[in-house]
Amino acid sequence: MSIDLDEEAAEDLDARTGQVGLPVDAVCVGCRSEGLKRIRVKRTSLSELGVDELEDADGKSFRHVCHRCQGSTYWNVVDVLHGLLRSTGGETDGE
Image 1 (cartoon, one colour):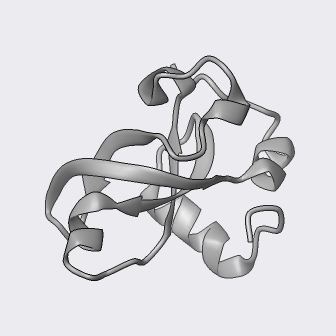
Image 2 (spheres, one colour):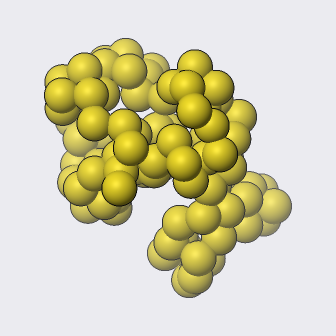
């Protein structure tokens, strides 16, 4: 899922994420607690995740806006989108 960027994921990335940072599949903690497990593409930085290496990003959390929860909430990283990262030039710091 994370290697190939399909059309839906590309639209999601354009519509709901920042312009800079590490692209990840993530799930909102607030939505997950309500039984909704929809995975979204988000961008974050390694520093927001509290890690120094890309390999350590899986399973970490960061704060980001959730339109469904209507506020800033924590997102859990499900997977790093390595294919998208390579196609966008490898920008990882987001700062």
